[in-house]
Image (cartoon, rainbow, N blue to C red; front, side):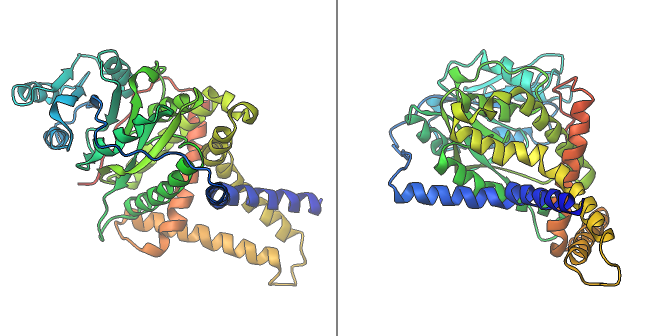
Length: 402
């Protein structure tokens, strides 16, 4: 009995380690081997390649940031005659639609799609794509700021006909007094950026950040209206159709972190529910014999992050406890007892970090245990939400720090 428990214990630890660290190490090794063998994907940078693009901004009740977004969009370094900016404000009732309409005389390339009913971001994107006649469409959120050369850095990759989509980088703007949720979120995205660079060199990025991603217009297709992770589904379907999805860190969208841990929890649970929804709809990607590197990357980097590691963590704790109870209690410092104490200490630090976060007290030492535990807890809650049924693709907007 003890042997079986030990096997399960170390198997769970191995799965968690692989999910968060092992895959990164393995991908790095594969990339190094490919480099030594001279196997590289082309990195194109032809300044003369300037296809027409449409920047699409779904904007539901965004009066607090819409002026800054419009100014930022038209300040981007790209020929004005080759860029349209389309705001989709369906359902907005706070003056967003009227304000953008008032700016159309100032910005000739500014377009707007309104409507009285809110149908959600994915329906806004589906509605927008039908009106676009440029070969490239770039999606971005209303509450983000794009860097000046964002379009140039994105479109250069599309000169390679094998590239179907480009994922920009999401950057979290934090300061020294930021709460732990914001700082932890920033740390998480820095690590994700590192993994995406490896993914691109290995074969393809598996998923894009909805804050900024581009796709060939003819590859967008139609996305189900109840889809929770539109960016993920669009980019993975493009990749599954035989195109690469490129990660471009010099095309980035900056946004503030969530206003509070409660707001961040709502967002993370929703994303996790969307992750399980995506796993169900992309089940064909598990066929490594057909999709090769893409299947390996998708399972390792995404599917395991949502569906394996979060459920292994409580099992590790319980199995460790069972192993301790099977031991001689007279020996205070056995291997499994030390591991148990380490786990207890880790989760105590996470709980303290959560409490301090609610008190708006920031201690860097607690970022890792707090945010790691927080993400996996949200993943489990996201699974429960998905299991109970997803009825709408409409997001409940999370408040962002000012």
